[in-house]
Image (cartoon, rainbow, N blue to C red; front, top):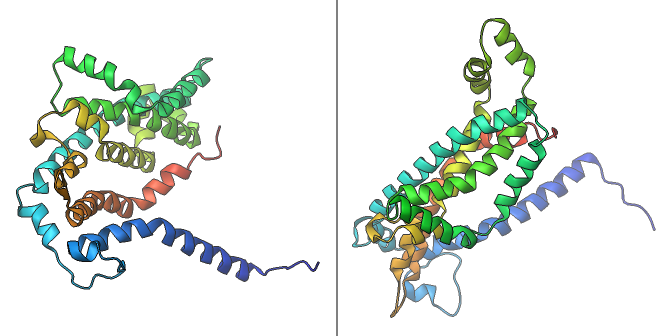
Length: 281
């Protein structure tokens, strides 16, 4: 059998074609959500699905902005919860990641293993103990309860990612700062943190997105409907008389917009933060 030898240019074309096919497959659900939000209910339930709406309507979006279930209140709730969770995650995870990177101990691998295990625990396993703790602390039905819970997910992830990032930074910079009179803490604040801003931006973005997409903690720890975030508000369009699919799709589109905006604006920092230190231990 004759072996087919491809030129470099042909290989690139094939890889581009595969990338386009994979991209279309992954983006098609998002496209279907957006076009369904622009359809009428009659067109959504038509026997023959339409890939381009025949009658484009923005009524589902105006309902989200000025209707009885307007999205603005739940948007501000999501923004507040995600911001609190992100700040907590960065404040706690950055020093921990730097310490594990610069001061290796015998138990470092055990810590890393424990962080990995926490990423595998199902949310439902820790809901009950968290509920009891928050009840005793008196923070149930406040923004702090889901924010703290979301931080428990993002902190191990951020530590694992930032540790490898800090390992990739030259230790000589810290040693030079110490020669100039800085102690370890000041060298960390003045030298290491400023040069690791791509990793910090990446960590902050993922911490924010973890909390932004949370549903289980918000539904469990917040009972007041007006205080719930956007992810919980989608149930407003599911009633005993049916499901308002075009409004759900419009709600989903608006819910995904901040996520898309963060990835578009911070793309280079996220890629740099994830790839730096990829060859370290």
